[in-house]
Image (cartoon, rainbow, N blue to C red; front, side, top):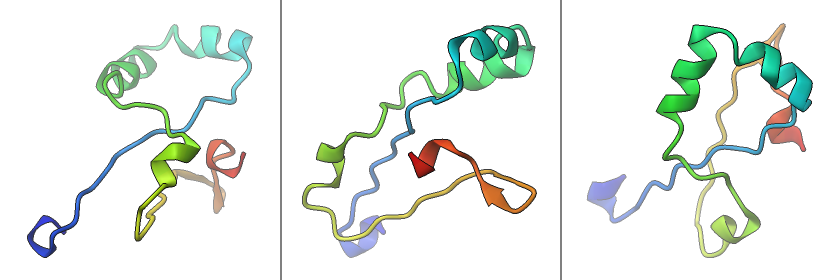
Length: 72
């Protein structure tokens, strides 16, 4: 993409899991690792969509359905 003059802008979506659930999930080592890896990745805003020519959305799936966060 960069060789064609494009620029990739990575963002994550706002967490929609209730805080009490996050507190339970946060007790697992994998959750802490993932949060550390995403610490520098900003949360997406509507302003991020201004002036872009394309959009690629990736989502993990559960029984063939995308995760709830990108839906909201």
